Image (cartoon, rainbow, N blue to C red):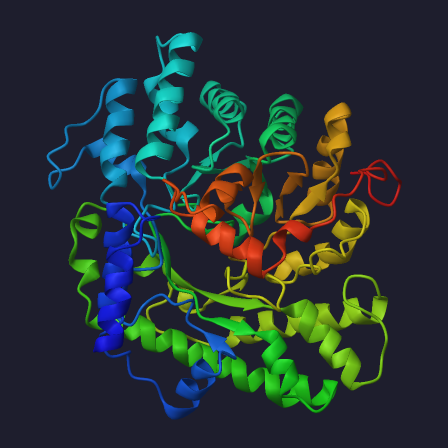
Length: 511
């Protein structure tokens, strides 16, 4: 108990944390004093060795990891529980959403999804001038960053070209906030070139938004739709993700004696243990926590049967290179055809196993494969299926090497293309790079511009100036600055090689 008290006292006395941040960390420590959900011996051992990982979600899963309320329900019906009338004006609609966000749980304590904002707000914009719309969105945007200061909070817009989407893009470029994260849904049959250009110009300006391949995502889900949340995670609206157990492919590869042994024995074995870890956490959430007795279910914001499990994998680059070494091969992941084919075989096999392995209390009865973005403490591994930091090739080669993987990761996959600041002299190149990547099957296009203060870590945003202050022991009002600082120190995110975009119009790549 002395060690526990020392840890709690260190949190309460930490001068870099705000009172609200201290309360959050103290709550996490209290949860982790409880016994873990029951695990069999093999799963417990693999978890202790971190071949499989629970993402440190906590010992008592009393809420889902990610919750995606259907906010159109509260805008249409109001809320009896929250004593909210049906909004009639844009101000009332925004106010209703602001209140709703405070009652949306997640693993971070901050909502990771704040809705398809243009669809939600457009019906309230009749009679609102463009200037008034811009002013109201700017106030809303500032509220989100100041009151919910977490870069995992995520807004969606698109695929139509509309007033609200344009106002949001304009405000996002002006304010350059870490929150909210933002995704534009792009559909070549619906989205105008003008609004896509506005979105890619914003990337040049502030490294936001993500551009989602809407037709691919739309066909993965159902008529009620999907949202992009947190980093870049695709999940059912009115549901979400109950948990995200993840598999360390490097540790799996280190336990194999050959490539054949990896595919025939080691990978299937540890994949099964990771399923069992996820199911144990699901059983607690659905059978013991009473989460699904809340007003969120009663009023139709969420539905119990729309929560999935994200089956996360990471460290593919290191796994492939380890197997190459075992077989005495020199080729490296991302650069060698044989190594790339080995990685693609992993993705295909894992997708097949996930598709054919039933789970209880999961949307459609199956988990969804996810290329996981890593943790700030992942010092020797690369997120998901990405190419290791500092070794990235030119952007076109980068896209062509990784695009074949995207078809398999239905709950989210993202690469971060770090582009040299010379793109600011030719922003059209970013547009063409984006269109080419999506045409080649990218589920999502994401880029950093090397000279920007606002950069992506794994999918969430930090400001380098905030990290500098945090490392000088000045603290930070944003919850994710600490994670970004740790990632900068331990995972090499700042070692990404800025590349000049120079082949985006080549015949092999042009859309």
